Image 1 (cartoon, rainbow, N blue to C red):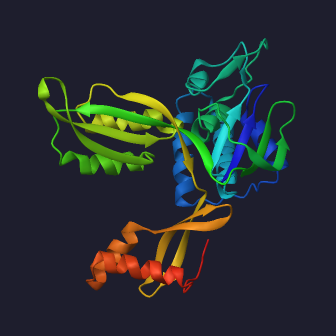
Image 2 (image 1 turned 135 degrees about the horizontal axis):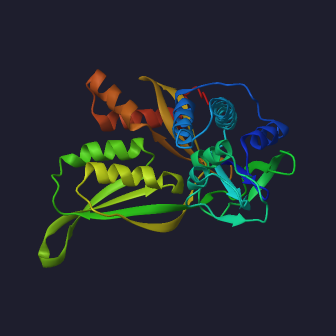
Image 3 (image 1 turned 120 degrees about the vertical axis):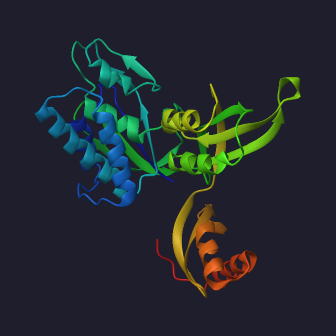
Length: 309
């Protein structure tokens, strides 16, 4: 997994990040794939929460757009931040963007965290403090202000610290869970499941569980509050090991399908066809789902495929 680490002992600004990523060799070309456009829109929405002048807004918008596009197009899968410093001055709205991050106040009587810099961290970075070891590939400096380090995680699998959201629900129709699942995954959930439980006085209920990254905590909680009658949710920090993976498109006897490939020590270990693609083939050709699943895996195993990364 390719990761990027922001080191910010003197604060963080949009201009500083741009200098650092360009110094590290990341392209400044703007390619707006749907996934990247979504992240840019999310970042610009955060930027609007900070009162700025017209010229400041234009500059910050340009910086945020350029940074998100460059990092995402380079294939960075996760970003982290360490040694994040704030000064004695700063707009409250800017500092609110850093809620959940570990910060250090230094005796500098000026604004060293700009809105654009805070928006980038809030949009792209994990709030966890444990950073995986990596094989260093690129380093970039943005003056004395910021340094970025880019590389591949060193372990054959990646260790991640993620969050588990849980809440007990005893007054909701099970039919509502279908839409809840869809909206949780759209908000960034890694996995979602529901279990039947018994609460006090033997009331039947459901326990909703959601795996998520730290940066999606507020957004996931908002979906739960909107879509369920829950009055509160709880979060647990957990560690997980995950294999590096790639999503590729392969050619099978039914046509092209998407497939997730897991790797251990750089060797392909797990192959999983995309469910939605198999479902479409099964419906279109009126074939049993399990037959489509087995034959697509057989085509992959026999290497009768065309890989398109």
